[in-house]
Length: 374
Image (cartoon, rainbow, N blue to C red):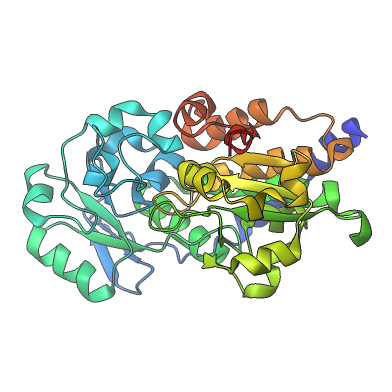
């Protein structure tokens, strides 16, 4: 069984590479004889670059992450305040310092000069003399204003996710790859992600519905930490595994707050906790009502690393999914060590291991120990 899965993964990679080569989803840039590059960003703005950028800045949640994924960290000359150290969170329970895989694998990035807040500061950007700026969570108007005030080409991106907004993520990565001359690397990243998500689905696809434990994710982070009743009806790792998410009935996806009575009614078999919210969840679980849940009584509560942490950390989505898969269906993941798999993913996407750092900051994979003292 293990050998056949290895052959399957190799086959998926090969097919995905062929498909990627023929269909990138991003228009090719125009490169006139003068060496300039003209492309269309995700806000449908036409942006012209004076050749391939050698000095770049990424501002806004997700921009620096994509630069790292494209092996372009050596081009980065400044980062926004949320990607710098020391801890720069505006409030407790918010992303800060070096608590994301791309920074843990590339700690020097957090020491770079500031490009301002998450929307970018024109004067701070100008001081670093970049050739291009990539910005997320913006509008066409704001991106154009930043370009005009800084005098630097600004390329707007959309972070997307590995679910319903996967196309937005893929387009943004390819757009950045085109701007940086890293088209092949962009396809390598997408091929790996596609093969990995296919592997996750294939491992569990034939499990009958009756044999799938009913699961719940609590403490889902969104703009910071939240309590036990914060969840996601389309939690990405569950979706990749075809897991029976008890909260699926609450909406199409995204962070939601549920009623305590609803969770008691669902009474899931297994509970996972987003460790960004560990302290808040541990406090909530002191409520005797929650202690009556079967998952807590049976010791089936586990911690997973936060992936919705300064936008989607696609690497952690995949890492969490392998740990959850191993926990729910151990016979389907006998060949997987979740910690080793996490660092395989981090090395491929971020350029180095990051699990140890994530474990130090958040707790890592395993039983949610704080439940025992709740």
